[in-house]
Image 1 (spheres, rainbow, N blue to C red):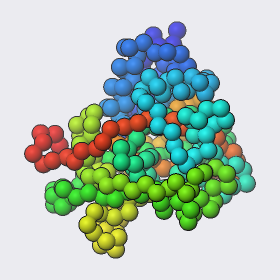
Image 2: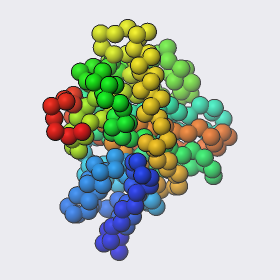
Image 3: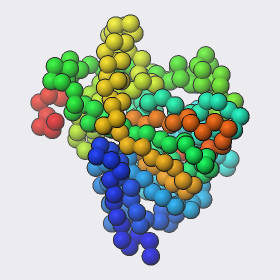
Length: 289
């Protein structure tokens, strides 16, 4: 019987764990929910295999984890507006998410996490990489940590999903509402994670444009240094998808990157995003590292 013996296996030394023995298609008891939440907070991204779920069951599981926020820019699954399609057709060259990023950092209150379910996967390729931004922060030098303390950064949806963006021009029906891509948000560069309490580096190459009070030209060298640092392989795990696989990641604590190495093949994923809380800056006077 599933859910009777839950096993958690780390997928790397840095970030991520696979949870075995759980059937997410049915309501979960409080103990199982607590185990999943604890693993999520501890490992920042958790994976499940062989989940045979309808869209309604996908939504029901997500609602046990939090409140759902509907994405403005992705095409929804027919009949299920709470689920966004992440699709690449055989004739399309570009995929969605082929740059390190964290979802919804352009919102005033960024997303808690995303729950991605594989519906159709190519026979090879199409993996997703995840990177720990807590480890990325921990590995910074004391001098750079001091430089970042108190800094805030601007995040925007305009250049990614807006009318003039490359994604909008290449969307081919996969993206919508480009005229609504007017979100700009300012967040601390180093946040205190609202659940774990860890210090986390909160900038990303896709949505972060510059530091508050700095020009983009002034910001670029330091941002590029942070982006290169945070993309180090020793902060990462790599997940190979199968039909029915699920990844549930923490958008406050990780980056992710969708590898585009399956040209001529179809890949269809269903994604639900969960509402988060306002982010607070980490302070040097706090007791946690």
